[in-house]
Image 1 (cartoon, rainbow, N blue to C red):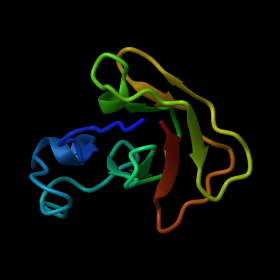
Image 2 (cartoon, one colour):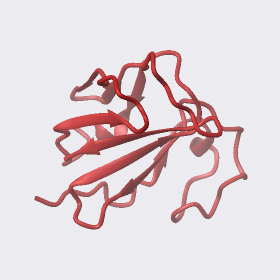
Image 3 (cartoon, rainbow, N blue to C red):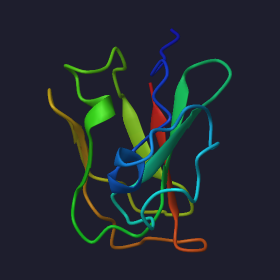
Amino acid sequence: MTSSLGNIFSEGPASKGVALSAQGFNEGKGKPFTAADVRYTASKDGRTLYVIVMGVPTEALRLEALGRSSSAVTITGAHLLGAKASLAWRQLDEALVIEPSVEAPAIAGTLVVKLTL
């Protein structure tokens, strides 16, 4: 089972003004990062997708690139790295929605969510 986002490396307000042409080669050229800005990276086998959140969300995170209608990716699990508590999430047609965690172990103001495909 291998899934891919194709050429989607990021989404969020900081990405809108300066399109990401390749993995990270436009960083620092757009708006300051917020919790609505995310970067994606996948495992070599295509079974795991890591979502790097560039801030600590206080409300639900909506990842439009991972909605059922815009992605061939089916999410089967989500885990906030460094947290023991489970993460509430749901994959809707328009977006993957991840609820904020009460146990958010931020490292330098970022969070990493491990998605199982």
